[in-house]
Image (cartoon, rainbow, N blue to C red; front, side, top):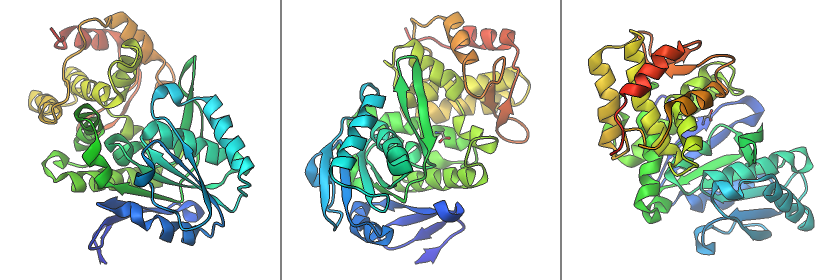
Length: 349
Ligand code: GLY
């Protein structure tokens, strides 16, 4: 296996090692990597497995040990505490012990929910993720954040629980509807501004690898999101507000794309970057076929209220913004500057 800085390149796949001491794991990216599941399950030393899949049975390889298959459903609607309880009860019914393993196969909502059930069952059982959406491969399944939604808000109940391994099989992506694929590009576009300069010019498998490698680097520096991990939320302050304000009509990656364009405009308005760099935000996002304009029907005041609730902002308005030292968290951004930038954003017709 050839080794570059952070990525090991084998014939059939790329491997990124997330080094977190006794919580370390590998992420493999490539066509057919799901077939290394039995090897990784054997390395985990498990006797039994529960395989929770939102995809057809033939998409999930046999883990190579006795297992029970459970159906999951992708989507924010199913990312609930009730689903976590159902999963934990099924794990108990099958007699999983804390030495066994759970496998998740699906989009980010499935890896998040199964990850949380794994974090809680027997106070923590090994989990291997097989993310099937582009969004989950480039971001959601890496880094150990697990959560479910409450009626009061998104991702309000969760835990940090690092997986045992993540297998990003690019063959899964061939079946994605166009809109879902473009949705994943939203998290790739923002990588150009958080340390993966020129990511949009790479072949897709290299983009996934580069995004995972950058995320691994950031998570290794700040596993619990108390500093540099904020960088991953580039474009997300407005992005999260747009998801809520549109009742999730805008998908996460689409909302982050608009939020990235906005972050460029706000950074320019605050004198942190020049007009050319602001325009680069728009061209990178548009180049992926992602939206760059605000939906016609969202109210700016409502967006500002929602942005005040963002987890990054202890008080006031906080954004990750580009600048002379690269991207960094900027807190206490004046509301007037935010309101003016929102008012000048292009609107969908
Ligand atoms: N998706 C942002 C994070 O994992 O921190």
